[in-house]
Image 1 (cartoon, rainbow, N blue to C red):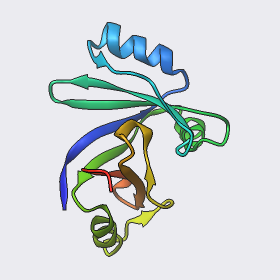
Image 2: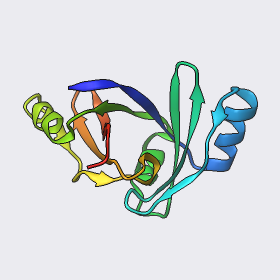
Image 3: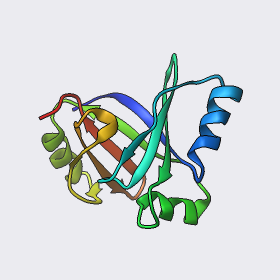
Image 4: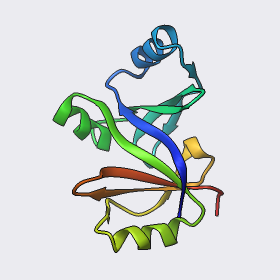
Length: 134
């Protein structure tokens, strides 16, 4: 089952400008920048006492975030949930009409833990991250 809401994904064109905004104006504690060639993104986390926002910029024109930016200009576009058993949770959600957008892959920003994105007509895009690396 889902353990907790891990973060909200926020698509940006310019990662450095977004970092400055979230750090200097919105008072977030901003962590290091990660480049993830598998996900084709550059990202960092803006943390608050109540949660985290993942600031995500495309790493090349073939990044999935490029499409998000082209469609709506960016902003909030996914919620990420942590789960103890990624494979079982994907199977459970598939029965509820969530469709994976691709296979589970290790993510640099999560220390190699696997992530997967799923789409649902109502919930839209969600991400699952396993709680421990397999």
